[in-house]
Image (cartoon, rainbow, N blue to C red):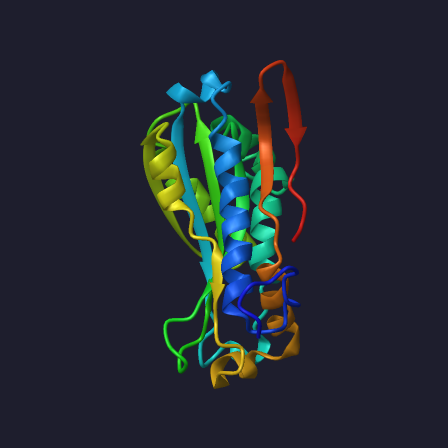
Length: 219
């Protein structure tokens, strides 16, 4: 393996240099969304980091899939499924202005199953969303899958350094470890896809005189 890469290695090759480079590129993409000086309107917004996670267990690994995790992003932001006669799309837009979604995968040890994460980094006009959205978020996620867990963090008002620190992008998994091999080829291929992901913006992104409505797509 050469030390300096002119072209990134294929996603299925365990290359630390290329993975580090991919992570740096994606961190830069996310930071750019919130680091444009002309976007004065975001300086007074409240920032949040929501992480939805799923992890296989000894009881569930043989039929494990990340489909529910991927669906959680689409459903929360743009889904028509409703709770108390309010669709996910309407409920989400009541609170969230704009943000970006991306995935990460972490494995604590070679004998441990990996955790798959769907991250949402976003801002809002409203304060205390980690409290105000908590109960409804829990119920709406349970309608998607009972195996999904979440963590909701308030980052405060605009602070680019803190936003950068909150980014948890990357894939830290040993695909040759026994727990990962037990998950099967389809899940391993999903891990490879996440290595090459591009963070996906959602909501309304305002930059100077242009207003762009961007909707979420699947990975």
